[in-house]
Length: 346
Image (cartoon, rainbow, N blue to C red; front, top):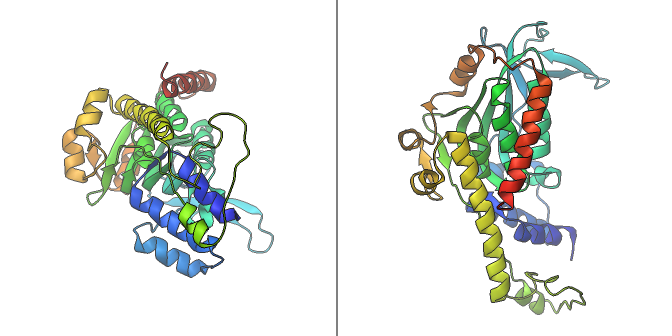
């Protein structure tokens, strides 16, 4: 089994909070490469763009809400040394000027997505958390806005990160704008913000979790290949891709999916300040809703552009506890413990 076959197997083993068609895109590209074929970088971009995933390299930036000037990290062309945050015109970001940190949540979400980033533009929870914590601790950052354009991704690490965002609401104003898709794990993160909006042409939702099992026994048989496990532990080889699922294995996979789905529902309910029953019944039941319908049922607060949200967050007053870093981190640690208990149903 080569590297890409193993990645396909990994995709089968992990529960997903991802729009199903996008998992199909990943599987197609991985299978293409597992057969020894290669796509050029331009072909990869074209295939991703053809399925509506077009913003895989949106930069992390700071925005001055009064001038709308945007600042990104600049680097020396020869040495690669960082030059600090500069505007597009090359001007340095003014010192001690309140700004809004704009964190992109774009593409497929993975706990550690580097192995897939070349093919899918994956965004890792690890990167998101580092950027968020840095912005939270930066005294020049008045507020934080997540720029969300994601079909979702794997469930690992998402609930913990969402709990961290919710706990930090007392520290700084935090917004999230679906620009233009916040689906599955993308919506999970989206609703953790205190202020939640969607663009006029955007969509949100796809609240659900699933796993898949790929049986490649017939494919291997046609190639004259077979696998035989020598294992210890009754369920060690359960769900392997070299044969059909047993009823017992299927029931266990369903149990795992149900557990993550329950955590997803609870997180959205906590973020939106509604009951789990309302999320289950009114928030699409796995469908995505357009902006007007999403606002009508309470999935978002407003319909607005990303720029409008940035200005709105930038105009908000500082939080009373914004300077109390130790208190903030204590809340984050407590939220982490709550998320862990929620995930195991305690």
